[in-house]
Amino acid sequence: MATTTSYSLPSSDARPGSGSSSSSNSNSARHINARDGHIAPGEIAIGVVIGRASEYFDFFVYAMASVLVFPAVFFPFADALQGTLYSFVIFAFAFIARPFGTIAFMAIQKNFSRELKLMLALLLLGVSTAGIAFLPTYEHLGMASIVLLSLLRIGQGVALGGSWDGLPSLLALSAPQHRRGWYAMLGQLGAPVGFIVAGSLFSYLLYALSAEDFLAWGWRYPFYVAFAINVVALFARLRLVSTAEYSRLLDERELEPTNVVEMTRSQGRNLLIGALAALASYALFHLVTVFPLSWISLYSLRSVSEFLVVQIIGAALAAVGVVVSGLVADRFGRRTTLGTLACLIAVFSGFVPMLMNGGETGQNIFLILGFILLGLSYGQAAGAVTANFPAKYRYTGAALTSDLAWLAGAGFAPLVALGLSAHFGLAYVSIYLLSGAACSLAALSLNRALEIRD
Image (cartoon, rainbow, N blue to C red; front, top):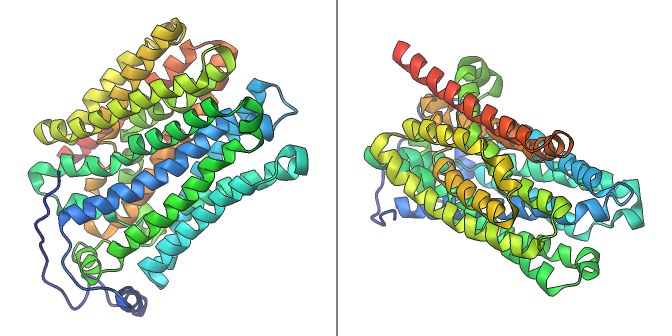
C-alpha cells in the first residue's frame, strides 16, 4: 500500500516554459480558495482510486443496461439480437465522443482553471447519467427516446474525456523508480471495483424483482446510485485538486494542457504506439464483461442473475491480478509484463469457442481465466508507453492515449464480437481477440526498437 509519509517540493515562481497571460490566469484561478498543505503519495493514490472507481461504476451500469434493459425498452420493434446490436451501437458513441471531450475540457482548463473543468465535466456526467434514469422509453416517446438516449450517451463520453485530472500521471511521476509498476496499477483497480458494485446491484435487482418490474422501473435505480456516487467522488477529488500543493506538484512536472495540434504533430508516434500497446487488454476487457452477458442473455437458459455472480467472482480475482501486476511489473518491467500477457491472451483466444460452447462449466472457466488475464494485463495497461512523452506533453498525451486505446480496443468490441459470433460463429471472436494481441505485440516491439534507435 502507498506510504503515508508527507513530502513537498520547493515551490517555483513560474512554471517552466510559461509566460503567457492565460497560464498566469490559470495559475491564479487554481489557488482561489485552495487550502495549503503537503500531499502524501497515499492521498494521490486514494484520489486516483476514488475517481476511477466512480467512473467505472458509471461505465458498467450503462454497459449492463445495454444488454439487459435497452434492447427491450428502447428497441422493442426489433428482435432480441438486433435490438442488442442497436444498443451496442449507442454504447460505442461514448468512446467516439471521449477524445473530443478531452480536447474541449483541456481548453477550459487552460483558459480558466482545473477545478472548473473538473466540476463541469462531472456535472455533465451526472446530468447525463441521471437523464438516462428518468428517460421515457420507446413506448412513450417513440424514436425520440432513442435520439435522447444517444445524446445522453454522447454526453457521458464527453464528460469522461473532460474528467481527466492528471492524478494518474502525477502518481506515476511521484512514485519511486523501483515501484512505478505498483503505483501504476492503483488507478486500474477502479475497473474491477466498479464492476463488482454494478454487477452486484443488477444481480440483486434481477433476483428480487419480476422481469416486468425490472424492465418497468427497477433498472433505473443503478443510474440513481451512479449519480449519487458521482457527487461523492466530485467532492473527494476536488478536495485534492483544489490544494495549492497539488498545483505546485503539477507545475514542477509541467503537467499542463498543451495544444493538441502541436502535440499530435510532435508526438503522433507516441500517441499511436500508446493506443495500440495495450490493445489486447482493452479488447479482452469487453470480451469477459459485456459480450458474455449478451451471449448468455440471447442464447442460454442460464439465470442472468447467477451468471452475474460468477462474473463478480471473476472481477474479484481480476482485482487480485491488478495488484499482482504491480509486483510483477516492478520486477520484470512494465513493457515486458504487457508483452507476456499479450502472448497469454493470444493463447487464451484460441479456447473461446470451446469454452463458451462448453456449457456452464466451460463458460465459468472462460470467465475466471479471462478475468485473471484481464487483471494482470489491465493493471499495467496505463503508463507503460505514455512515459515516452516529454514532460511538456504528458498531461494531454496520457489523456488522449487512453481515449484512443478505449476507442480502438474496447469501444466497438461488444458490437463486433456479438455480430461476428451470431452470424459466423464464436471462432471469429477468437480471431478478433487474437488480432488485438498481435497489435499489442507489434506496438511494444516497435516502441522498443524506436527507443534503442533514438
